[in-house]
Image 1: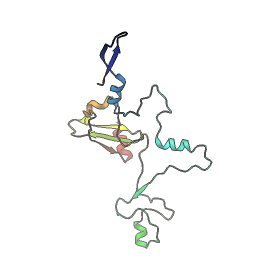
Image 2: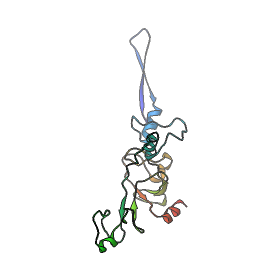
Image 3: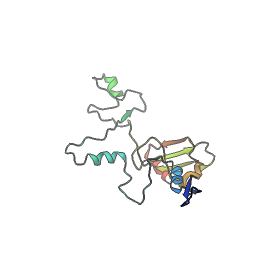
Length: 183
């Protein structure tokens, strides 16, 4: 709770009255983990919460030659451990172990790692996992910044008190696991 002093001066004298009030806005800001620049939405606005990628694409909307979102995809071969990019002329053995075809597209069976986007399914965990609710499934909403954020309503199962708690994010990668997690 954030308490602020309120000083009232009595007219016609040098006396002051000091009373204390609770600053509700600052208290809520502390509970949400916002800094002095963060501000909550006053009302629902579907355009107010945008994925950073869509912000980039909206900024490029009027441009006749828009530049794509700077995204680095990493291609991995799950069974061979070969390098991700092959630029030289490969030998027949290297060609079989290559992760990309002649046009640079990933071959079937390769794993492509990409950035998270809105709607991806992930498991959030705070250790120690003492009960089943310590691991919960959430849909990802990508925002600016390098921190994990979640709604205040789910603080109790995680026993989160915003004092530097370490939490883990496990991104679900297969369609079967995503379907199972959403149940």
